[in-house]
Image (cartoon, rainbow, N blue to C red; front, side, top):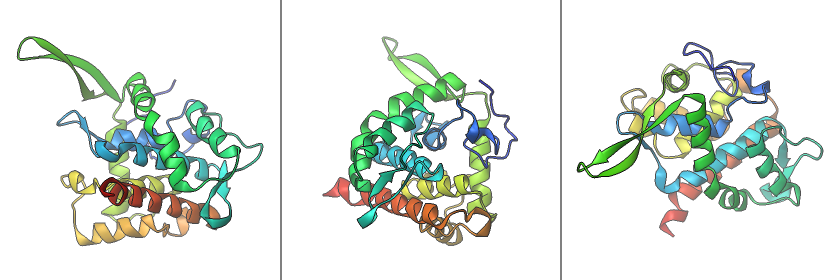
Amino acid sequence: MTAARPDDSLGGRAGTPDEATQPDAPTLAEDLLLLLFQPDSGTIAGENTLFYILAGAVVADLALGDHVTTADRGRVRAVEGHAPPDDLLRSAWDYVSTKPRGVQTVLAAIGPTLRAPLLARLIARGDIDRGDRKVLGLFRTTTLREGRSGRRAALLGEVRRVLVDGAEPRARVAALAALLSASGTLPQFHRDIPWTSPVINRAKELERGNWGAGAAGEAVTRTMTAVIVNSVVVATTVLPRS
């Protein structure tokens, strides 16, 4: 397994533009979970609705890889004969391959089991370190710390360039920034990504699939990703209150 260098451009699935084609490349959901990890506290932002957020990243990853497409009434349909090589993505693809399903249905079905395996992958890659400490000198509790790979800083820098500096993103970075915005956790990144009106407006544009010419790609993919991100917004803001 090849570790991503901290200064790599993140146009692909991980630290290099071409890494998305590698069998062991990090998924979009791994990148999103790594961004949501807060090194100062050792916690993960958005825990209450995390499974919706991670599920959205999985479906978006399938869409960006042309493994799924849209069916009637905005449902998700698997592209026959084009299963993803990644086991975690394959499980989600298998679920929608039986019949087209609504995005909310897919998020609810695949989301609850994602956190543990995704976190395990990040720990195995050295992006996050797992340790333990004593509480009150008696009880041991598990702690999470940022690893030494530098990949979180590189991801955050790429998202910042898109949201703050107005750089035109590649499709994967656009989807990552849109999902981060949809998660409702962007205010927690204020130190690195100032929570300003231009940033908010830019993030909302990405949520709607307005990525710019450089990340245009297929119109169907952009539209589908926007549908997925909108479903994440609904899931994280409306459903928890209902």
